[in-house]
Length: 192
Image: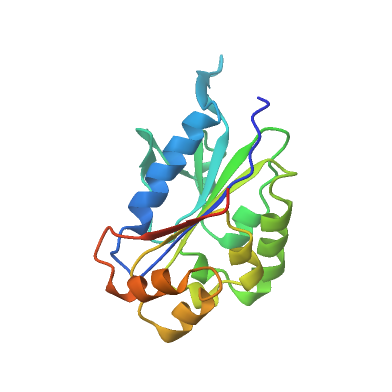
């Protein structure tokens, strides 16, 4: 597969605003655009290109495109693998094929993993990795990571620190709208 992968998508907002729904929809669109295909090996293993690895502590991602998400602890799972810890996800060896990494609740990445996360975001295009991440607290995400996004969906936020973190990414008009957004509404910022 020679499709170029250079995508970093963030959905930020309070709980219950629709972040995960938008991330799932966007992930499925991008998988299809990247030439997603499934094949069964002679041993009955379902392989996919590109692969998807998730860190999903709330376990909201039970399936993608109608196929189940499997836990890494249950063995190497194709096509969608859930990693229990951020550390497991950051240590995935991607190989030559493109991969999609999903961090649902990026705010749970602790400071000990900030350097590895930042490196992943910086080097993603060289390693052919697309990153999809959601967070309730943008203030807890390293600014270098947010600055590298090329698609940002901002849902309702009201915490002062979160709004300040996004000040340089949003226009004044967008910043004024964010606290008043209803469930399912978002401000989209794109640098693609």
